[in-house]
Image 1 (cartoon, rainbow, N blue to C red):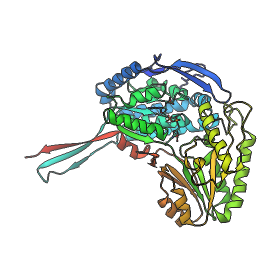
Image 2 (image 1 turned 180 degrees about the vertical axis):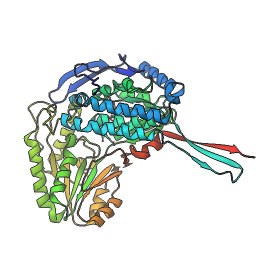
Image 3 (image 1 turned 90 degrees about the vertical axis):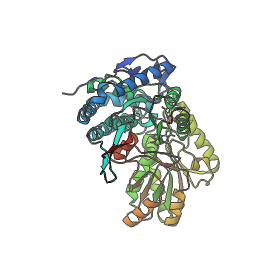
Image 4 (image 1 turned 30 degrees about the vertical axis):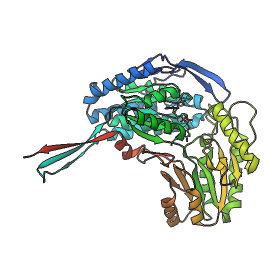
Length: 487
Ligand code: NDP
């Protein structure tokens, strides 16, 4: 029998501290539904005193609470139960995620089993964290241990809050750390709804806490002397600040999952249908508010006219339904997250229109809500802002290429390196190009796919460190060498 604990009428608008909801004492967080700019709720986020209190509870739970003495298997049982509770409460969690972020409810629903599977995956890891040993050939027996770091904080962006929550907390907990998550002030409700299941899952008090609030809360966490690690998902701009704060405080470990300007390369021999489908996903998912969105499209000359006509048709279908209610299960394309993001993206579009041909889109949507339909710009100059900067909206730049070498050169002409996609039916070319495109995740005939076993992260200005898979385990443990004198 499913345990339904999350209820739509109980807005989770508090801090989750020491296994209960507590009123915050910090700045007011105002939540707005981007489909019509209506206010959802206003509540107090965490203050500096709340952060200090939460960190000291977390530290105590790490050092002397029951979590430290649970076996790996016992931790795994809790993580598995948590995954099941998330599944049991999926529709309500998805609603809370959709209502603040504007992401279509159907997509949020689709996401929940993927979030649960990350906890299940790391439940399996909890009793498999091991070290090494070396024989006493030199008179010393050597043991190398992987030990938890301590209090780990995760700071997340609004565009995939539940994914980021799982990617950061699940490996950290499996390794025996305690965790504090700060969700974006734009969309904290889904994360807080999940937090309400922490106690029922069996996590001891103080092990897994959530502090909603603005960027100031993230800044306090980043410079906190008692936090051992920050894992951040967000903009490159904020990522630099976090790294700086970590350096200036206690040199805490930092993992940065930042922005991107990812390329999609469509070769003449690509399956037109597949390439159009995935290139549409690559820019239209979440109205382009996806870090790995393939926003620079390079098409080989022989297929360019046919491909662009088909892509335009695919975008027209989206444009026809623009303005649909994201909280209806049939809606596949929602608004941008808030007015700030809307104005920022519109600014890019208006500037782009002055110098670059528009194939589709670009008009303002005037019926209310922060909706922007997908836009295709053709042949922007190499210096154009729309071509070089991350827009984080549904804006695609298209150029053509003649040769494979030229395609690779175009793809790599960016400081970012988060992802990329290659469309071709020639497996040799696919693998050759995949090895040359600089990016943490390369899709062949697909894009923006993630899974618990496979690392996710960037090259260059897209950050460093990896989330998911065995790779994340390395970021949540510290290596200790123990020498035993055998003489
Ligand atoms: P931001 O960088 O603005 O914010 C991310 C998080 O950091 C939020 O929780 C934010 O709080 C917090 N924050 C803001 N200022 C500070 C600070 N000084 N110190 C510590 N934390 C702070 O990004 P967005 O939320 O606007 O997300 C969009 C960006 O995230 C895009 O650039 C996108 O590319 C990137 N991104 C990267 C992903 C990846 O995996 N590589 C995935 C998703 C997004 P608050 O929101 O409350 O102000």
